[in-house]
Image (cartoon, rainbow, N blue to C red; front, side):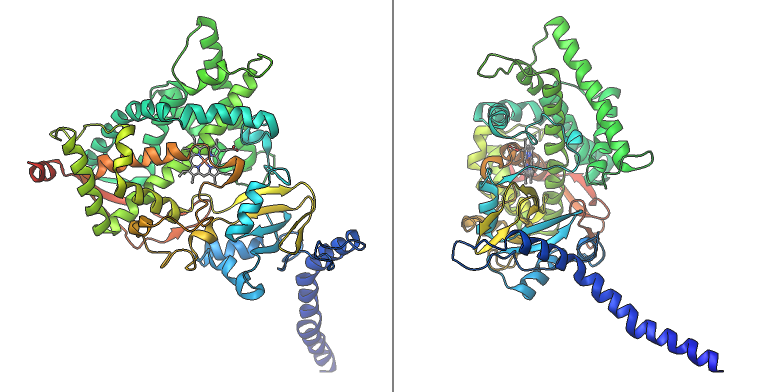
Length: 505
Ligand code: HEM
């Protein structure tokens, strides 16, 4: 009896004493540790306003995992991704839009106000690039290198995929493939939009970047990219069975495939009008060409940058239009009128040119609204190269900096009723600094014009020739790694050509 009482008392003590104490210690240990380290390093230094130096407000979560579980809770389980930042704003106030945290294995500062984000993205000398596994993205690729090499590569890429002359030829190059793909979707009748769009986007990429037509090799390349992208976001643990290990294997296969193509071109002196050829011909100030490794790294990184992003953007445009009949009818009206002005639409396959795009005002609004709501890159990663002061706080050297662009696009302060798809909101431009879907500063997305062009082309052909309907309009949304309906936007699609043709006669 006495033993049982003693045992119960022991358990009560454990449950009401030791366990809460341990939880309390675990909850505060990481925060206390980093605060103490910061205080020690900055003990004799003052901020520019003469005050004691401080790190931004926030909480660094539990040991090792930091706030990763909280992030996963909001993004994966609760499916309320904006609450992750919303909770911080409520707890610590909205200004200056900086919070301390511990995410993805590193102490981190989250930036989430237009001004703070702009400051980080523009200050390339203070905030550098740090990829978890640089080899996966390519150590010599544009997304990884800095300074002069970055400027040179970026300059070439912009000329190749952003200049009006380049976009003009890309527009005519990709359209036959888009038109054929839409016809094939309608022939199937029911499709998973995400899967089908992926195929079209990849075929276009192969054509634009390496002049490759669909073949068993491009199918393999596609699978390797799939594996690479999956490992990219996985924990960087490199042993058999892990996604990161598989991604490294995919990366080696991709390197070999692009290297083989490169050598074949050199052997026969073949010159193609594509991105690979451009990289092969590029020279620096000393007249030196890029090494093979640089060419391959840049090819791979451009596909990484442009493949999933464009696929997701197109999927979201189709998804939102299916749920917004008024927007779709305005889009259709503008595009039918455009097609008609170009001489008719008996086959539904007339192409638009890059020069038509400035006239497609409503389509442009649909594109911007889609990109705002899609939040394809919810955050942009940087690392502080030194201690940087902003808004009265110090962003400590070596900490990662997460520019949370998503929080701007879903904030009712900047976009009225932000979760509603409303292309007409773009009658007025966004308030300065509140639209950062493509990043900003010297690393702003080099493919943003190309992404907009591809969206415009597919919206044109879809709206003039097809009608579609989501099979599960209320499907849940996954928010990681990218926002996407769980069913991949399964839909029914059928040709509309005759109806529209009648309207136009
Ligand atoms: C809707 C589609 C797209 C979105 C939302 C998007 C978004 C972004 C974002 C957020 C960044 C990071 C910017 C930064 O670090 O400050 C970026 C960088 C980049 N993107 Fe895109 N992107 C898209 C499509 C494309 C396409 C189609 C391409 C080209 C094939 C492309 C090529 C690049 C490149 C090369 C960079 C690195 C630029 C640099 O470091 O200088 N992107 N993109």
